[in-house]
Image: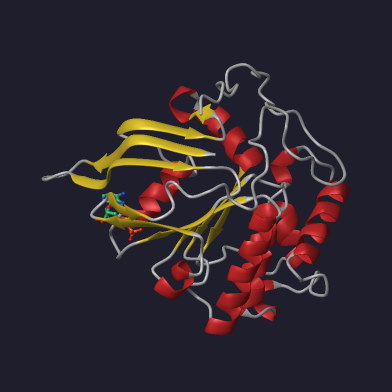
Length: 266
Ligand code: ADP
């Protein structure tokens, strides 16, 4: 699902900042792992590279079989829309818009009709235990509920990869625990989940920990672990699960071959 080979991300300066340096990392479909490390160690930069929001200065990034280097920005947007869900510490919900409206917004570029988007959003909110909060607006929800709305939005399009940057960072212990439980459930359903956290208790409860320091991976206790329990086949072009109510072509820009996954050589 994720293959980083010798990935470096540097920012110009005097001296330049090597936010991520020479990182190689393999994550198989169905894994659940934590990326841990002190502030400034390069976790967010790494997540942005995995999420194809940023390109490496050197090295190779492959996500869901796609070589990021070979894709245009537009193809990367399509890859993200189809395969990757994001959750952030600050939720990023639209104020004044209901929970179902917020989740449906995340499906705007799927080509689904409004009715289908609402149906998919409703199902996704039920999946995270918020079926009774559909019409509540963010200010009427607790922090934990808001993060669950954000999670529902992230997974409404059924991404194969979920990236969460400090998802419990703004939550009290109980709400944080329920969000972690939800991440586990999504993983058990087959979603590959990467969680950035500086919460060592949270990290200790996940099957694999990748530890970063000064931009480098200094420990990885799951690199050679046995197959993950939540594994499902790696997605292929057109192989994504179709959201309730309809689907859309894998490459709306009409370039199905440009972004075709290479043969898996594992
Ligand atoms: P973490 O998520 O572990 O706190 P980051 O990935 O945010 O770490 O940052 C890693 C290093 O890269 C830090 O030293 C940070 O200051 C630097 N950095 C991050 N983004 C930029 C940027 N846009 N320009 C310059 N330096 C940056």
